[in-house]
Length: 447
Image (cartoon, rainbow, N blue to C red):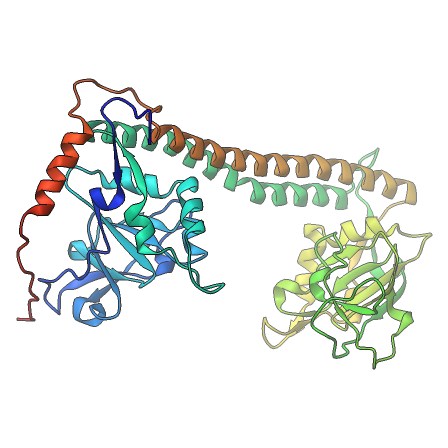
């Protein structure tokens, strides 16, 4: 490194920390300690969450050992890339055992664990670590030598502490912003449901009025059920016949790519192909997947209906298919459909034709339906833009956090203080301590 800030020094990680220092020793076998599997490390904020408590004797063999203040670094893909890197804090008895897929980085005296942890969590550092990985696909790992030999620009200890305090201050603001943004998807769905509920009540007409309710059968020309042939697992291409999966039917939206290819040995059924104007609704499956409806806007001449769905074709004098689909997705109709579901368990429910066709739908003229559709689409488009802006804002926050870390480790986030002891003096003391003979460690037995 060149052009280091005042008082900084260049060092390898192994110069300022022990990498994989080994067994802890001097712990009674019946001592209660923390146990940290890989899922207990959050990849969002890099913290240990909900570790379990085990006796040391139970987990002392076959697991990675570490202690309070150590930095644990997930070495396996994709955990490392996702940021499963944490400081060991608030450990039971001050020690822990955990996944063998952790490297342990133990900062030397005078090196801030928080400073080193934030350095290792940088996206740029993780990109370098990813490039160093060895092993087969799906089992690639960061070798310990990468950590040991990676160069770090080290500030004086007081500046390390100032950098950590500044990062903490800024990231707390980022965290609050993310928390607010996390509520947006729920609010989006809530607002869409409010729009649909108002449409059902007749509040989106030019002149608000309570509508007359008629059974669904009054709006439908035909109701068909699909079939369930044994299909290939891969989806059909443009020249193949296919059968949709129930996952093709999402609230209002049809996903044609969610299908399975029909084997050439089976004869297609053109009578159940899916065309523009069709309304589809799931009729069987787990509770959460029954009574989901959408409408189709294009012709799919080789894509057929599955057995767990109904295809509705509307009476053109009574209903626009888009209007009918919106009504089926209103809170009022969804509540009634929930009551109509039958079956012996939540994993295998059914929506019978008789009950479904008796569902009451508000009756509006075709011109009123057209206006309702226009207003719903306009409101939904505005909501979807809000959701898209939310996603962009979250990406921007992530970018700003990484930019902040880059500035921090280049010495540009806080001011240097000429009165700080230079990092070179700190490195000298670390080397002196490392040269001192170490006391032998033993293992305590249970009393």
